[in-house]
Length: 314
Image (cartoon, rainbow, N blue to C red; front, side):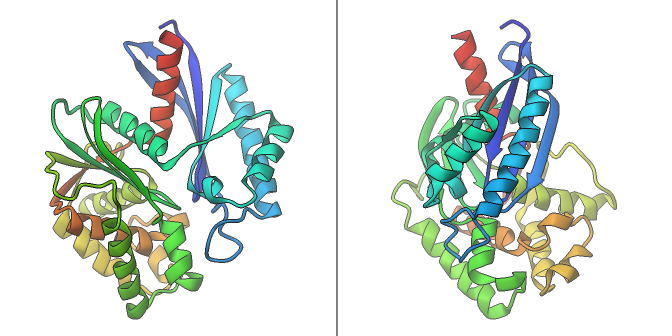
């Protein structure tokens, strides 16, 4: 493929992301610019997260105008995808039309399965493991995806409505946690995962892989505890079950976001929703009998980029 720039926009529940890449041949790319803005789409009205408020639409448009300007400065072909928050919004059409009218960006609202496919594609590019069964997991703001695949084959994929923002809203009002709410949240996560008709819980796998914000944040904290400083990249870092359990115990002992902010390696903008994210990850470790999870720095948006590249070279 000739040298070309692509931009992928991931309109998520917790945040909007942009990556701009330059193709380097052999179906590979290098990231030349990126932006991330935390927005918490659909979270300001009620606990169901099924309505995007006028102020959120306005804020979203402002962010996307900035993203488009940056992508245009690189002459990059752009593809924007929206996940859980937009997928479920009662006023989804209003949001999509407002964005298009104001920015010219046409957003593709992807299904949970399509989201899982993109995530798997991104993970496979970051983690070079061939001919092995990979159990992949991505914890987002509104949903969590589980994928089992080997090479190009996906054996199962499901998107479950448990995310760090969604569960924080449901169980931890004002982001203050209690033992009782933690117990209820654990039961709910367990029920939501186990009732999936798409996941085969008896399938064996060779490696567990985790991707996206919550998992990257947890990896970052574990690395900080080991080294006393932030170290990147996080790709291929291994989250061990006993270390995850220890970290979860410590974070859940801090009842307020203000207390959690002071934990070593904590991301300032994630201190409010990290308890819910940790509970999802810990429950997945239990249900799928995971002892170690490899961290992937690529996920949905990198998968979108790879799909764009495939279309151009086809």
